[in-house]
Image (cartoon, rainbow, N blue to C red; front, side):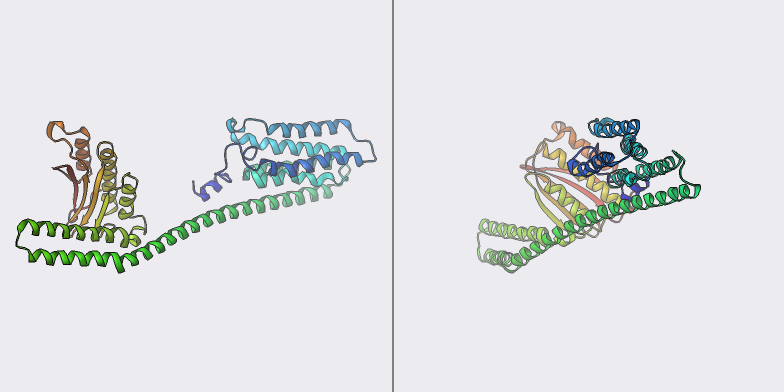
Length: 390
């Protein structure tokens, strides 16, 4: 869920574990400061020189113990809205404490404790409930007993409501900013990692271009020249085949290394095809020729990617994909998978081959299956001059 949607839904920290804040890491650090304040507030009743109403003290202690016991509940299985009852119970405990000590005893500031708790660890609507409860407490302690004039009561209600709202709003804004900062830091870290990877591969590519590829290319030229010097056809064919193999190695290296900058931009078809192939073990050889990313419209690109994903998954269960080649010409977008072993033909052909052909036909893609000695070629062809499917 996007951050904006979570805020509109009243959900803060949507990535927290179930039962938070009453469960999960950091529970001791969250609760100890509030527990210490609660204990000090109860103990402060001993400083009073006047008799303290035993009934109000008992209610305050019971509600406080109820709050402590609530942490043992199975919050992972309880409805989420029930969590607001914990700070509300503590607010009731503070009300009884104030009534026991007296409205002028100075203990009333403790009423901010449940508000701070909800603002730090719970949701916006729960903070709103506590603000309403604090206003109710202020009204109650002003009326029971009736010792304050009306203007004092109104002033207390207005100021405490305003102060409580400001504290809750400011704390939630700080939480939102912190969450956004963490997300931005994670995004920048990912970008830094990607840029570091690109820099390392550029350095490797430069080294290959200066030494390895030039040496292989020169060796291929030398083999072509040597082939022209021999009069024996078999020797000439073998030398030319070796030279062609070196040329293919150069093309594979260039497509794999020097096209990295294109693969890392926008997760286009090139990047998606590379990711599909890299997920297979052993990883097949990959050859990408032409404008792989920009030749297809998004609809046909999605359908081709789904067809390749299905094919690689099915082939991997029966035979290793040995090579994946994508070639884009002026008229055709061709993708070929070469299996490492021959697949049965005719009546003995596996059913998944027919399934691949049917799915390709439904997507408007022509699939050709060509058996060869020791391998099978599956070729998906999309004419670039046709009207894109919708």
